[in-house]
Amino acid sequence: MSGPNPFGNAEQPDNPDNPDNPDNPDNRDGSGEPGGAGRSDAAASARIPTPRSSVEDTGRPLPDHVPQPLVLEHRVLKSLLGAWALAACSAEESVAVEEHLGGCGPCAEEALRLRDAVGLLHAEESLDLDPMLRSRVLERCLNRRPPRIPVPEWATPYDAETARLDALLQDIGDSEWHAPIRLRWYEGDDRVSRKTTVAGVLTHLMSVDGLVAVALGLDDPLFGVTPEERRTPESRTETFWKASHFPPTRAVRGPWREQSHAVIRTVSFAADPSGSAGRTRTSGQLSVPYGDFTLPLRDSMLDRAFECWVHAEDIAEAVDYPYEPPSPRHLNRMIDLAARLLPDSLAGRRRAGLAAPARGLVAAGAPGRTLRLEVEGAGGGEWLIALDSPGAVGSAEHEVAHVALDGVEFCRLAAGHVTPEEAAAGQDGDREAIHDVLYATASLSRM
Image 1 (spheres, rainbow, N blue to C red):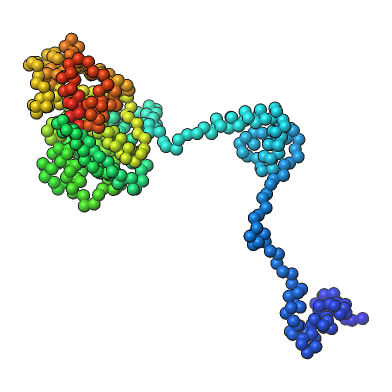
Image 2 (cartoon, one colour):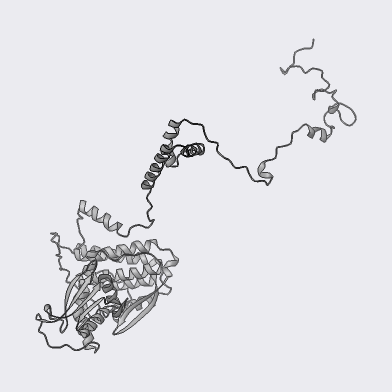
């Protein structure tokens, strides 16, 4: 009997085929002596199994996994219909449910109703935000708790239109700031235009808004230029463009945005602290010079809101983006401003020899020949336009002509974007008076 194994292992029997037995021929070297140093590599590799080849390495297509339908009871399959309609079942459960629906009419009808209900839960919606969303949110917030310093009513169109344009600018890409735009307006009876870019339009808005900013005591975006160069909207824009060493980019959005916010803050702080509706410390009568004419502050804010909307449409068209007209209440105020400016515009065209002379002298405040301007659609109304003198009063008893226009088309005519012939929808009465008023409307446009 042999002694105990010092390593605690069971003794190996004297089996000649045992790989650990020195008498095994595989454990001898080339001289026939025991040991593994000289055994052949082929014999060693023969005992090591080769790795299995993967089907991905063969180049053959992988087998498709076809889920096998589960064998489920009717009540279980019926309970799965809701999850199946929501696409929340596993592949095997879906196969089982669909197999069942092919042979069970009541379950098929229930599945159809559930699918329709799921469609209502996930209604298709546009990814673009509603442009009026900001206005609705602000209106609801302000209705719950009025602001300590409200924006004057006559400044709300400018606040709304600059906010809408800012939302549009936020969504456009870097390359779209260089999209070409052609500004259009009337000089006399001639339609003129100027080519620029999206960023160039925004610098134009900022430079002309600077007239209001300066009137309110704010910084002028134009500095280091002569008074003549910053006197009119046209000269201010041209000076701003020429002063830029490089074409303007999206970097102009920040200064324009800050300036529009500063204007709104300033007119809001100037409001009557008692909160009386429609009243301010200056009553909105602070004069804003435009070079050849001046406007009271309340009308100037409407003018800037109108131009902001018109040029926002230019930008939206250049970048192929939908853009809606202003709200009917704001659109009505813009139309009213244009209608109030028509007698002066008509008188200016007469002085330049571009309109027929007045039929007679009318004292200020007295009624005279009148054209009835009917503006249809949202924001529309009726205005009586005095024809013979800016100081005359329009009167229905002295009506000699009637013109009917769509509200948005009238504004586009006043912006110089359509011709008088394209804008007129209905005409009746004195043709000469109608022609003069339509061209006087187009003459309200400027760069």
